Length: 222
Image (tube, rainbow, N blue to C red):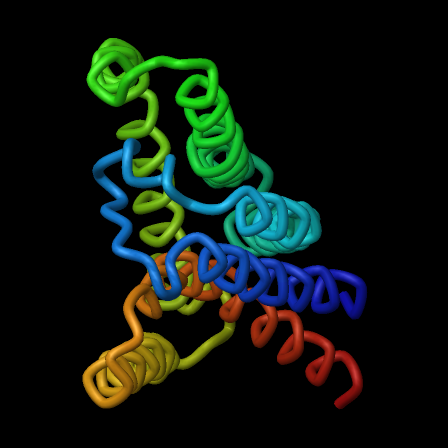
């Protein structure tokens, strides 16, 4: 159980690293996450820094999902483990979105601009790709939400061994962090600080697992 608790901790660290990696893409820049062309103006060194940081973040996320998988299997039984396909799809999707959409594609488009293509031509390329990628990215987002529902169900049902108020504290903590970032943006005028908050929300996948395993270890020692 101690191993699973540590794996959950690695998941939390991985989500934080992803948030830091995202900051390299957003801080000080006017980036619209819904407009892939805006990523073309991110400096190459920022893209590479983001990629290397998220590489270690990806390892953390995968280890964290192993912990969550074990917790769901122990809490709900062997049959429930098959529903954990959705969280693993979410983990794979997060990796795909960051490395391909967030780093590789902008590097490719910057190379195309250097080769002489116009921004209008690149917009056409992006629009064509979006027709095929949008359903895939929507499936990834849906898998992420379903993972959150699995966590919520585990807590509310009592299967995870956590009090229901844990959900309130967890989401309230995230809301406080979000509000603090908004306040810092208002005071400092630095743009892009909110860019890492989406990845930081992924800590809510692993915080329940960490404390659930911690409680189980305490129960064994008692």
